[in-house]
Image (cartoon, rainbow, N blue to C red; front, side):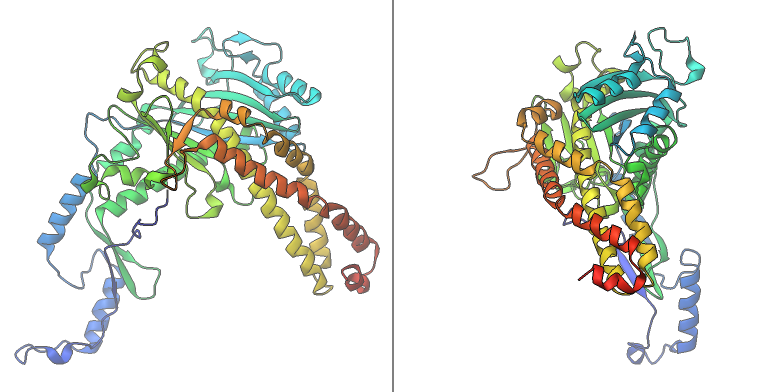
Amino acid sequence: MTDPCKPELTDNVSASEPTNEGAENQSPETKPTPKWLRGLQWRAHWLFPNLIRHDQGDRTYVREHDKKENERSRIPADQNLRVRMIWGIELYGPTEIDALYAGLKKLDWGSAGSWKHGDGALNWIRQQRSYGSGGWFNVGYVLRREQRGRFPMIHNYAPLPAGVDSLLVGTFQLSPSLTGVLVGFKLEEYLARRYEAELNRDRVTSRERSHRPRAISIISPRNQKQRVIEALRADLRRMAGRWFRRHLPGYFCRLEHPAAFPTMELLTVQDGPILQDPTIAEAFYGWRRLLANVGPNHIWTYGESAGLQLAMDRYSDENEGLHIVAALDVAAFAGETLKYGGENAPDAYIHACNELLGGLLVHASTVEYLREQSRDLNITREKLKTARSGRNNVMRTLHEIRLFFDRTLGTPVIARELAGKSKEAGWYRHDCSRFTAPAWGKTEKLRELSEEIRGRVHFLASRLTNEETESPRVLRRLQLLREWSHEQVHEVFP
């Protein structure tokens, strides 16, 4: 998560190659170190920054600083921070639907929850798309095939990644031409506690070669922990993406930047907030900021319980796509919401959060879908301009344009359908639950997440629909490019 006040990962010190400045101020009794020797010492330090020290510094101060940073970023033992589940969502339009049918047929999910349901998810999706209906189909829990027979009420099985206990699956028919499959990966205990283990592991200040020439970056324990958390989060997201690419590949799986796969994780602690530090003095240095560096205006709170909050800022890199951090304070959330599942039981609040958050991630993923479609269209337009510059690029451009039309089959229809659905505010409020964030101004109302998503979908879908008028002209150009010789290219693009 990004924040304007977030320091750089190497925010402590960046040392550069020494110069002769200050040599004339040395004491007459101190023999100055020759320039060539200082340069040699620095180069040795640059090659082995943690083995060969260049400046001695105050090592006592560094040790005390490391100790303080490790203590501030450590999680209390009674909090039990866990990553209970990570969700992934994939979308399927006319181009991807055959891959979904093939994947579901191979997986053979014939049950809805704990009940047999004919052909299960596959038959339900076929019917919904055939009749233009919408809705949701609960596949329910999915186990490893090796566990067949151990749980009599579960009949769906699939290969699972290492460290995953089970899947929680649902399918959504968002429009007549667009289907979504939501899969939650319930993590086993050793994987669920990785964040806590890494934040509680003491570290010492280290040095590494900087991206700048002949510079050394000094990395504090806090920034080392931040790096590890980001790497662990990226690993979990890749795990979800790999599973979809292997079993149910769809639109996001075939993007050039696979990190754009939309995901969401569920963090839990026993008592207290996760996204906001109640102690203002420690807010910058504490473990909460390392988990989700997000400002108060970007924290969404569940209307019926302040114990459930969301942070869904985009990472700094646009190619990394959407990732939502759902933070659950078990003590504040327990009660009426969990009375049917048993309070404090992990399965109970995993199931409750799946019900509350699943639809939200599905609808947020349509925003990502429309963004990527707009990006693809803009890139293709630039390639059309390239064809005007000369005949050498014509055949390559033609090939890329043909691929564009192949992969965007049905996009105009989906854009029109989503633009129409975005006018139904009640549909979004129902599926996205009620999450609010502080208003931008003192006189404004609380911002509702369902309305933010709906407004964004409406804007992007309407823009794509309006740009659809360009398609006949583009197709005509493509036909002329195929029929005419290279010498006539400049006449095709007047």
